[in-house]
Image (tube, rainbow, N blue to C red; front, side):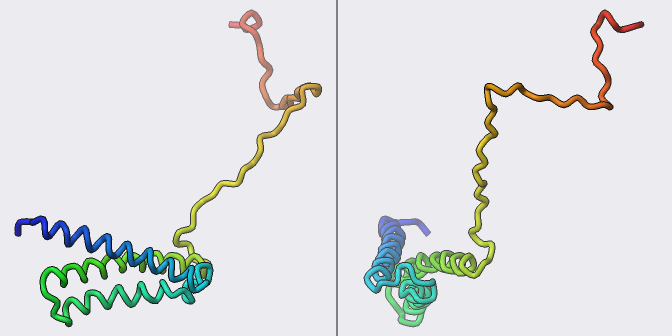
Length: 137
């Protein structure tokens, strides 16, 4: 199949509409006062899950005509990528390791006082150092 400008518009358009829906769902969370709520209490979580399945089902079972069928599938596919975020956030909030990152703790370097002489320890088992003139061949 040769791609046409219509195909490009449907593909790009589907992605942008999906992103717009995702952004709109975040605003719904804010408006409902649930933006900081646990993941299962946010409207965006459930709307993302429903949209992930509803758009492709509507395309197939609703017998949408071209290009609307492809557009619905692309929107549903874009929303399905949000499932990764939902799963990852649920695992992190449940104490899982998904999304956990190593964050090194800051340890300040030791400070050396200029007035105190540096102390060095000499080991009893360390061999004595000799100069070249003291070496016996």
